[in-house]
Length: 114
Length: 113
Image (cartoon, each protein chain N blue to C red):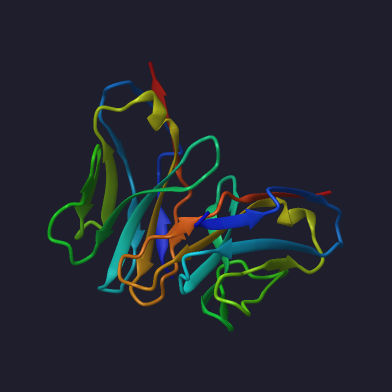
């Protein structure tokens, strides 16, 4: 079974600093995808970034980048120049190609301090 | 408006009652999902559907029933609600393609008293 581990229940970061949210995954399938979602206090789930297992380069989306280390089965989210609006829960998720289901980690609550 | 909508937004019910949570999407996405979100567990998959009339169990299906007679609708029924089913329920849909992201509804906050 797929398993996603997020070891940081909560993090506090000073505004404008970069932050790394950790995520490790455990799949034996060679074809998989990795996702990060943000859940602000309003409750909606917002897609941030995607990385495919065969992608050669780390994915980037604006201030978000995914530090993909395949051998270590690690898919950390990096947020550059954090903003107060980045305060939220962040979930890492993975899927094996062909079954479309996402398996989520337990999340990390990020708080940006002014 | 296009998108994925869930109803109701909030629901309070009593143990033993049947409750149906509705989910409707306008994108004609093949895949639809029901997740529940609980503190300490993240989001856990209850049921999913690959197409109309095709459904399958997820990680935590016990006590739930789904149907998908039309591509756009994917209702979730709690046949006899229990307190352990108090949770936030999210419906989601996705295109059937490699890397297809999930689009989530706004969620239904269900309290079983």
